[in-house]
Length: 227
Image (cartoon, rainbow, N blue to C red; front, top):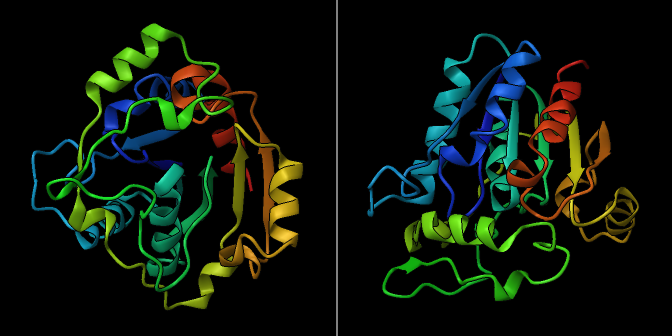
């Protein structure tokens, strides 16, 4: 199956470099996206441009695809299911939850000079990054891409309730499946309350398992393709 991989904030398609060969070994065709404004040199990119890039990748896939969103890009994966419910076989949400219709795409950090730069590791101390070595942190920070404010300040639009029939797996890294279920039951993940099939997969990692647990992550994603 084609597997569309969408990394979160400050990352380009190379974030999946260690996951891609593992998925290929398992018989899949991974498509690691470099989003507009996140590695393609387009400083004028917008949120709509990123959505269009994800939808274009799904349209180009050979049959219905697994769409994987990491962190903030969980929203992009969910928006893709909304835009192409018949072309998305499954959505995997790695370390994040999709926003609702009308929400700002990424409002956690305010733009500086029209971009949202990587804020350093201090905001992610603890379970998010405890499994990352100092060397890995330095490498990731050195490659981090400041994301245009026109991306982060974009407004999420959802229109087709057929998205709720697309199977979803929440991949739980720095939190547990039990945490995710509790949040869902408490109404803290409103975008998924109507999902007709929602599964959970635990992975013993921090927020960036593509760097620290690529083999395990690939296996979980491959499991999502098996229906």
